[in-house]
Length: 364
Length: 114
Image 1: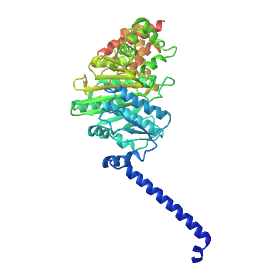
Image 2: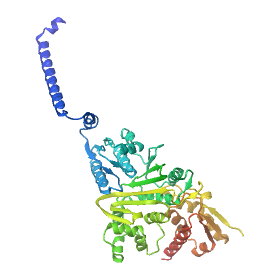
Image 3: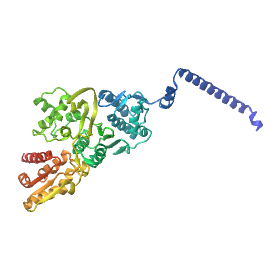
Image 4: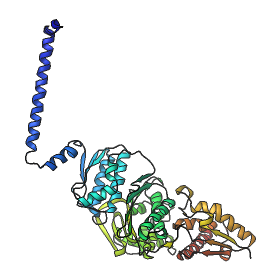
């Protein structure tokens, strides 16, 4: 052995090894020196945030969620956030959603966040994020189990159920599921009235929306797109809120793309000949009050589709109905139809059920 | 007098669903094929009244009702006048459904004349 260590070949190898090792040590020392220098004056919390969320996800594209993360109150901000994510999703880029600056998060935004996260994870595109510093916003996210799902993997499936045994449950599917509607209403009525009741207006709303997604969300093929539904139970105020979203083409794009043979083919032009309307906000108003249907069929309107949901609101079967589709936000209770600066490719509907809404006693 | 009674809740499902079978469970198309058409055609054949009870369910999508009732004329070519003279509808919980169903039948009849 001694002879081996004294050979010229070994001493060359040993020298080369020690030089390399020394170079590595110097490089690491320099790296630590620069790192420490960069962290001078940074508070401990920020240093630990950097260590936990910035360094491990250095090559992720960082997308900042809006401070007011509410689809209803800040439609343009949330649409901008969704379109940035969609852009990276289409390019299969991994993203990191920065939520730490979110000051308020509303229950209607949960469905947006969860649906996007599952879409990324199911297609095996890395998706991660931090959580809000604001306590209330963090509480809502925790309730939705978003943070728990953030570290789980998902498979491409037709059906998802998230947040069981929580105050926020989220479902997704492609078909119309009337039994699910019944179950959700049963649970909602227990929160509101303390017993099982039937709410036909909510059931109609759910069926019409699921059917709309199934039939119209994809221009090429029916039943291709998922619908997503989050239900939040507010036991204190005895109120249950429903937030429904699909990432289809949206109402106006779907109308414009109607093919020959459909009763709605060329409907926008037909409508322009008969009724004065300026933009999509006016058009949505005409859809909701049944004028579009009357013009297309030449017959009295019998409450189909979106106007059927509005009828349920007018009969006091549901409350606080909001619709966001393409570049329009409609708040039906306030009779407000407004153009948004950004366009959302899809349809988002929010409504509430409270103890003043019509219902029927007795379970099915 | 003999009368055929159909209760959607009892004879079909407490949770009626979409229009077509391929869109989901408990569709209007399935209800028409399995329950409504056999009963209505029997009633017309025997010239006896029939009653459809819409109450007791979780609620209806409009296309379920349109496909069920409108389809009697559109698909099965049953006579509109006969249906209207023999049919009685019960919908105490959602009285607006009575008008809706009548209109669906009328629309299908008018379409069939074209």
